[in-house]
Image 1 (cartoon, rainbow, N blue to C red):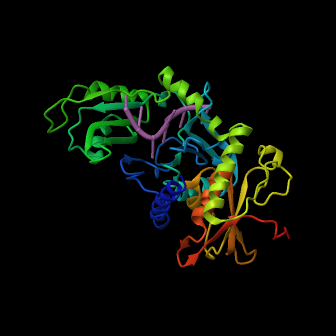
Image 2 (cartoon, rainbow, N blue to C red):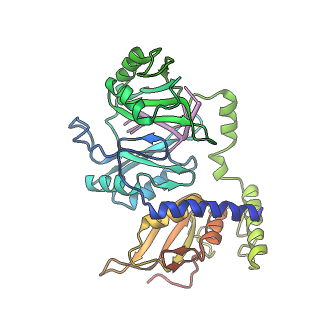
Image 3 (cartoon, rainbow, N blue to C red):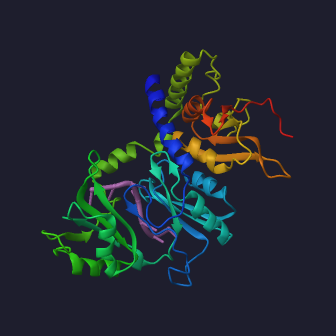
Length: 375
DNA sequence: TGTTATT
C-alpha cells in the first residue's frame, strides 16, 4: 500500500512540475487539452453594460472541494464580497462549479489571470466572468455526434459560430489513441442560439463531410440513473467526514504506515484521534481546530500563495495557504503555512514534498510545531 | 454524453 502511495505521489509531482513551470495563463484558445474557452472576453467586449466586472464563475472544481476552500483559494487574491459553491439540492453533492464575487473588479481580473487553468487534484479549473443570470442562458448545451474524425475543435466552432456566441466547445477523444471519437459538445451563450443551431445543422453534412451529423440538446449531467444517484449518496460528501471509527482507523493506518517507513514515534494517542472536533484547543502539533497546519520552509523571496496551492492542492483538501512576508520589502521571509482538512492527505503531502526541490531550493515540510510562538 | 456553466 505504501509503495502505491509513493508511486501515486511521484505521478502527482511529475504533473505538478509541468504546472509549476507553466503557471496558469489567460488565453482564448485552450483550457486543458481539448476545450476551447473564452475566458479573456472582458465584460465590455462581451456586450451588456450589466455584465459584472466582479462576479466570476469557476468551473471544473474537484468534487470534494468545499465552499470554504473555494473562498480561501480566491480570497488569496483579494477581498471577496460573496462566494457560493453550487450543490445538488437533493444529494448535497457539489456540481463542480461555483461563483466568486469580489469587492474590487481588479481582483476579479487578477483571479482570472492567476487562477484560470490552475490544477487542483485531477481537475483544471476554469475561471471566467459570470454572465448575468437569466433563464435565457440555461439549457444551451448541445451534444454533437457523427462528426468527421478529422474535424478539429476550431472547425467545429467555425461551423456552429454562425448561430451565436459559443461559451465552450469540446471534441471527445479516445483516451488511448487520442483520436477523435466524432462526438462533442457546444455550449452557446443563449438557448435560442442552440435551438437555431439544431434547426440549421442537425442531419446536415458539414462542408466536405460524407455523412450528416446529429445535433441535439446534451443530457444534463445531474440527471443520473437512480442507481448512480444511490452510489453517489453512499460516497461523498460523507467520505470527507467519516464517523469516529472510520476516522480512527484511517488515522491509525496511515500513521502506522508512516511509522514503518520513517521509524518515527506515533504522534497521536488513541484519545487524541477520537474525532477532529474534540481536538480543538488541545495541544496537538500541527492541528489548529479547522485543519492540519503544515510548515513549509526554504521558499524563495518571490514565492507567493499560488505556489503553495499548486504544490499542496494535488494531495487533497487545502483550506488556507500563507506566505510570510517581510513587512517592509513584502518579500517572502523564506517560509509559509498550508492548512489541510484531512490528516491523511496532509501526511502524504508532507511525506512527498519534504525534500522537494523547488527551483534551486530544497524544501523542508512538516506539521507545524509549537516551537515558534506567535510574536 | 463531458472536467456537472448561472447561484
